[in-house]
Image (tube, rainbow, N blue to C red; front, side):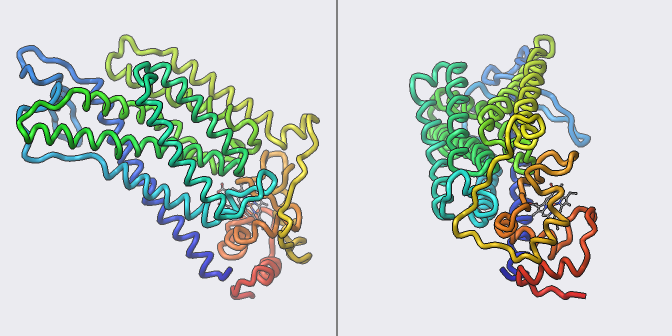
Length: 413
Ligand code: HEC
């Protein structure tokens, strides 16, 4: 891989992520705002009977009075702001990022030959198909008789997501499994906007334009799906950030358990706030205690199950590592450099204070080093980000050895 190509991948990743995070902030901000607004609406005496409630707010120096119609105004308003592009852009940029990082560079991040030696196209096809299936099954569950029983739907929905997380661990790396679990839940969220909420809003508006009363069922279904999105938001954010934390995915066997803990915590925190915004006096403070307990569980499970900790506790040998049969090997002089300057951190059993190999990047054997070649090029030759602050004292000559192996034309002193 040429240096320019490596930079282009990395820079592209930075730009897509920038867009993705920005769009997600706009979407989640809007969603939290409207959940809060709905909870804080109060019926005022002597007001317009068509108004369900109003709320006063102050922001940026201005006072706002917001009113919500029980169903709809008598006639369609002249101007109407729709909230949909924040959601669509979040999904489109997120899916692009998934393709860019995980499908475009799947050898690095998605495919773990020890789990399943997939070809890159197979990994991408499984990932994309799972997202589509994720939406179809969720939507089916909501429309089935189960949909009428919210708590039961919640439990079945949780079981479904956890089962998918488990299935992902059977085909992908731990990191890939968690990001796909997050992407699956996020796809459900945008699916709700695209396939349910927006069509319902269009029907309501068309009814108003035709001088008819919109069917209350449309508004109710939309609100239910919007509330689902609200409860899914915090767990999704954790899954999206998890790929920076190998402690969360070091042992794929416990990923389903961690997913349960994260969903319980995230949903309970939203539950607390939704109730709190409606009425401070009856806010369910117990939700914080259960959420904290779930996070402690996640910590204990993840830590005691991680390969490094199990080896420390004498519970297990370090797992044997399976390498692709066709894996290239790094030449001996490059291996020497990496083992001397990188392996203290990037090994299955790194230095004490590292815990797990950072970002799951193992640089212990010639095969592993070869597998992470593009990442080594980016971190140690092109950007000098690694070793961090040159912790291990790598020399320019040693970087030049890596550059020669990686065929990077960088100026060498
Ligand atoms: C002192 C410990 C330490 C040493 C030594 C070290 N690394 Fe790292 N490495 C880290 C940490 C910590 C991270 C995670 C950084 C982050 O989260 O942004 C990391 C991340 C990485 C990544 C993943 C970057 C990403 O964003 O995906 C690669 C690749 C990497 N290191 C390669 C190397 C190479 C090559 C060397 C030797 C030349 C090396 N590291 C030496 C601690 C170390």
